[in-house]
Amino acid sequence: MKSYLHVLAIVLFVASLLYNVIVWGGVRAVPEVGTALADSAQREAPLAATYIAIGDVVDSAIPSLGAFGSARLTDALADAFEQIHADPAVAMDVAFGTTRNAMHRWLKTMYWSTPVFLLMALVFWVRRPKQVRVLRR
Image (cartoon, rainbow, N blue to C red):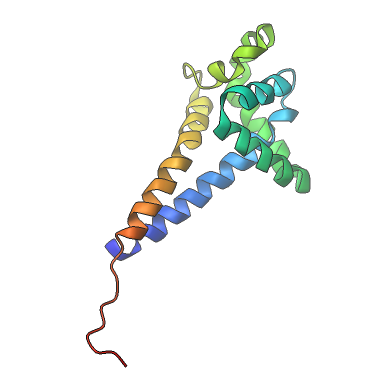
């Protein structure tokens, strides 16, 4: 099992990266507060801004993924729309602040899991068992 930990970590990293790219790529399509979220991410959250930049390309190529992403963000942040609409400068603070519902908790968990899985994949890659050859050919 130890010999496959790096593969598992890489698969988890790719899955969480794809989820974040798809979901955060649909941020501009979120009604009322989408542009406020994107602008706030540009100023305050470089990781979210990266997800948004890559996600814009992916979601524009496949519009159904953009619709999925904006629906997920709307479900997660619907309770905070009034607060974000009142003060757009605090959009990322609201997005990563107090957990509002189960979808919001999932959004925050997946957001932070991508760098963790990348670090795990790198550590497990370095520490993977290597083949030892006694005799050279």
